[in-house]
Image (cartoon, rainbow, N blue to C red; front, top):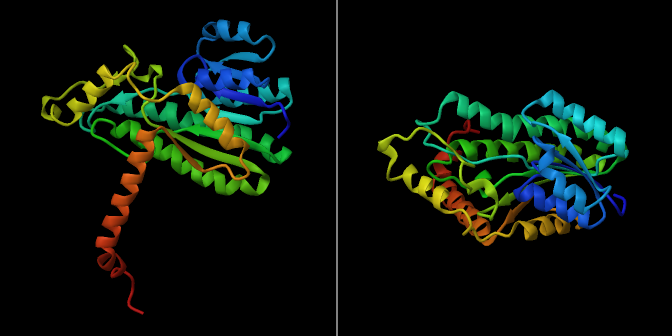
Length: 279
């Protein structure tokens, strides 16, 4: 990559997207900031004259996303880093979640990022460099009641990330899934989370998650500015990580989960291996 880079960041008006866009612009990089309402970027555009290129985009419109990638390459000559960040919180038991809620979140967290990655890869592959950063979550590896649909989308995004990483590595392209824990973004803000219609049967399980989301805004331990800096550090490394947990809670949760998976697989290893054909 060159000393100055061109970033394409979705959901750049707030939260992680805003922090990542600000960090890039502050370093002198160009940021194509893709948001649903470009007016939300007026302050950022004014703070970094000539470095922030606002683009109106709903990432669930996959055709528009592909066109936006091509147009950005036409304007700026390249895209060095694509950050698939646009997203939101969804809370509901599996039984509570409607088909429309399920499909809407997959459109936002999976199909949109997939289309943007598919559109940018040919440009990066031709140049022999580039990076795709998919904003996953600790929920891309660890689940809890009420986050089934949210985690399902993040699990899917991580599968795409890992597969894509293996496919494009020979072309000099990096793929990284970032896995934040609880950070002080607007995901838990008033009206930010979509809540499925509540079934009293899940008051003791999903209810705890609802209260966590409704009462957690402003008390999360993670600092979005530090996350943005960590992403830049990771991308500049000789061997960037495929997965990058962010925050102590994410690290602890993922390590505990991995220990539990290993323990269970080991406990049932004899039965599992016994399903092979006899030699």
